[in-house]
Length: 109
Image 1 (tube, rainbow, N blue to C red):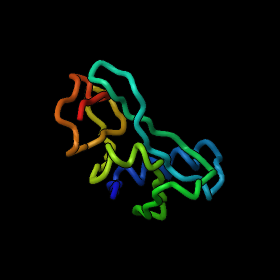
Image 2 (cartoon, one colour):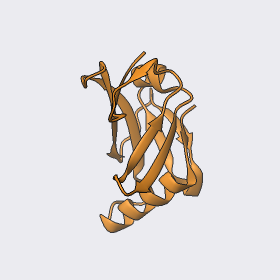
Image 3 (spheres, one colour):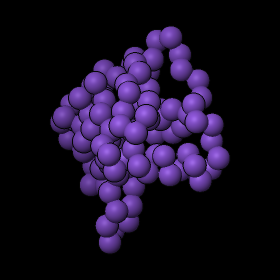
C-alpha cells in the first residue's frame, strides 16, 4: 500500500482547487528510470484510472493510483508534504530504497 499523510492530502486538495481540476482528479505516483541513483519518483494528476492500477483511498477523499510496475518499488511508501526554510515539496518515505541521492529525488533498490 502507498499512504498519503494529512499534510500531503491537504496540499493536493489545494492544488486541485487552485488549478480548477475536476473533483475526480487522482494523484498518480510512479517510478521512472533515471536520476543519479537509478530510479526517480514521478508525481502528477490524472483523471484516468486504468484497470491494472493499484488504487488507494487516502485522507480527505484523495485517491492515490500507481501502475503495477511502479508499485513493486513503491509498496509501503509514505508520501508527505514538507515546508521548511530550504523549500517546500512532496517527500517520499520509501522503505524499499537501499540508497537515495542527496536531494532525495532518486533511489536504488
